[in-house]
Length: 419
Image (cartoon, rainbow, N blue to C red; front, side):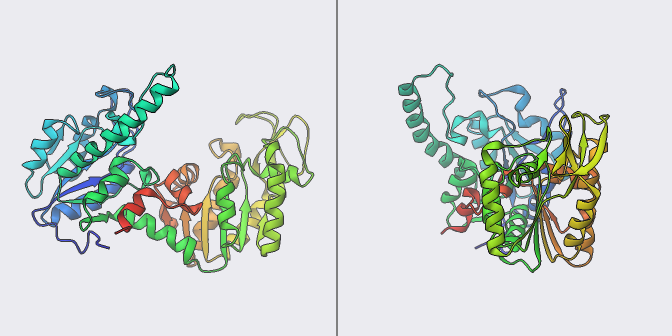
């Protein structure tokens, strides 16, 4: 497979699928440019190699073509600043401006296309009113499927090669992430961000050094079932924290007060614990918790055994005994995967568990372990505690990263790897 380090971009127009789905304030100013910054090394490499770049992305979920607040035009000033060059803008990704500007693009120049999702063909989903009949839905589905091919073909016609650097959308089988690659059988590749994401997840799931510890947290067991099922045959230790821990504790007969629980998943939790035992996996569930009498930062709180939480109280963080036990396991691990906080870390009084786990992962990394952090809340936590540079890799993927951990093939990745 070609990559951008061994591809000759001289005189080539590169269509780059980037993930510029960044947050904007009411004045349409970027409030967090992380996703744009992550794509800059790929863009700069292609420009330095004598190529030109055609950047395409979605922004938000527009309901119609031309929704002003979701125009990628708002990103042009920042792109011009960080790339130190003029950024041309095509005000319609399927319009004549996109055709003309891409055709006349010279080496070293940058073109940004308007929001791909202005067109329903990008996602392959018809936009219909809620009152649409089944017949109307079926007809619209057929129509969009037919027009999606022309949409994809036109998008491909703008360029000589295709680079996917949008890992955050790699789990979507959209026109610009999976379908367009077919038009570049010998000229498609990952950008640096995608290559790093795919490589680091592979390192954890298929090349892990042992002991391998996975830390799973967050609110619900239901959102982590497939992840747990895929990891049980790979890990030595599975640490459970966050709100989901109480479904496991309840499944063992514990008293959890008003803590979050999913009653319909109690049997599943029991099966997971039994499965871990049969596989020889050390499953660690918190033995103590910080309980509060209300879901508020200024609530009354107490440390109690995690299976003896009084009525009227709810567990909002793991306790000191659990922190000590988990930290010891993490510091002695060689591979660590962290997805999900240990408690309500957004509240200062219930952030200690998450912070201490993050510090233990940082210490393990300093000792030579490979650590991968992924999922929105875990990434937010590692950034909040200013430890992102103390771990091996922080994934930008969100849903894409989670589906990878579940063992699923991502359409955006598969499209590049297949012949």
